[in-house]
Length: 93
Image (tube, rainbow, N blue to C red; front, side, top):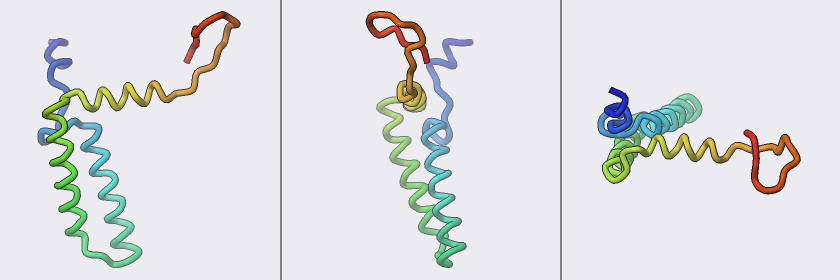
C-alpha cells in the first residue's frame, strides 16, 4: 500500500496538488483584487488559471513528483545553526 502512494503522487486533474493549488491561489487572489479594486471582468483569470494548470500538468508528465521536489527544495532553503563546535558540516536544523 505504501509503495502505491509513493509511486502515484496525489494529483488534481492530472497536475500535482501543490503546484495546482498554488496556481489556483495566485489566480484567485489576483482576480479578487482586480474585481474589487478595478472592476475587471473575471473571465480572463479563469482562462489563465486553465492555461497555467495545463502547463503544470504537462510538466508533471515529465516529472510526476514535482510536488515532492518543491517541498524538498523548501526544506533546503531553511537556515541551519551549528549547535555544537565541530569541524566540517555537522549542522542541525
